[in-house]
Amino acid sequence: MGSEPPSSPQVVEDGGEEDEEELSGGEEADLRSSSGRGSLLTRRGITLRVLLKDGLVEPGDGVLAIHYLGKNFVGDLLNDGKIRWVETGQIFNSPSAWATHCKRLVNPAKKSGCGWASVRYRGQKLVQYKTTWLHKYQPSADMSLVSEEDDDEDEEEGKTAVQPDEKTKNNKPGLNDVMVSRRTDRERIPVRYCTLGTRDATRDPHTLVELSAFSAINRFQPFNVAVSSNVLLLMDFHCHLTTSEVVGYLGGRWDTNTQLLTVLRAFPCRTRLADRDSASAVEEEICQNLFMRGLSLVGWYHSHPRGPALPSLQDIDSQMDHQLRLQGSNNGFQPCLGIICGPYYHGNQGVASTITPFWVVPPPEVRTLKELKQRPNDYGIPVAVEVTYVQDNFLTSDVLNEMMLLVDYYRAAPDLVQFSQYWCPDTTMMDKIKGSLSCHAPKDQAYSQILEHVYSQLCNMH
Image 1 (tube, rainbow, N blue to C red):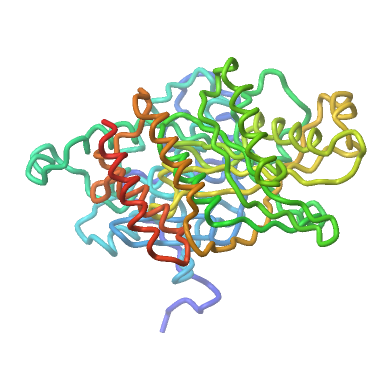
Image 2: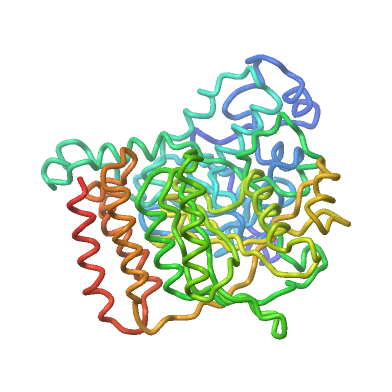
């Protein structure tokens, strides 16, 4: 008696000390126009409703998530800026109210929860969207107003911070260094393609762009793709070795009859991205290897070591350039596949790298490189490519040889990953790479014994 019917879910207002203040429409307008640290520019002043009105986030089902002490919670972002917990249908007025409620279910002693640091929107922390809002509307604002909200990071990831005495007791050298570097990594928040507009010289070329679906732009994927598991294994191995970006090429075959692009071989570039002197020699060697194996150049890959595996504006231009050059001047169609690998991004699920195949739909009426140069203000549209992954029967000697060449190349590199350090409190960097490569395992389980030799070489690189 007196209870709300199922169609009227409970609204939870208790958000603890970190709950946001509700602003009226006029106050929100004042918040945008204010240029200094006025009374409205506080940690509580920027709400989800403000971010929604300014287009930094969009309402959607299941777009919000909390990961706390091994438990996952999923929420819907509503049009009015409130949050609906998927599991129960409860409505929460703010991220902090939802975070506090969920954390108390797991840990009853929890008094409050910093929602902006604990809640992720499409994989990115809400506090990052608040930072973006401040940069846009209050460029002179003190960013410490945002950084203060990051105090729950270790709990939000579902792990307990390791104290110095615990580190000594558990004999885990380097754990503190890894966790510190993780905290200082700046996450780049992807933008939607529709927000880009025309090309702007002042825009950061490293701005990440969300991928569209072919269906979202009223198109069908114009080709099918099959990728060998050995390609993924070698590419993933290459991307794990260094904290710097790496690049490589993809060899395979294009069948015009079946419209099938088969990616059979990865060719890592054993060179630095800025080393133009050696780049031409490395590319020539790869071209010879392609010719000797009867393969064609069908794409390229590169890494975003600590960031999301999404293309930047620079990547979009590079992919568009590769596509048009591979197509040539005869206007015949041959696809060029781009792949981005994100090995050490902490937004990944588990230890597996995120691997993103993508393609770029040219701006309207652009079919050649010449036409693209005549339309310098238009960005291509990055789209996700659906791929079939083919499990190889065994690890080839070619792949093993390439892995050992990479080990030798990066052996003395200053940006070599320290595999004895810890990726997270319970997982070393060595565990991380082993776990990720196991996702691309061939059918013949003897591969694991072969790779142990490679892993032993990695351990001896320091």
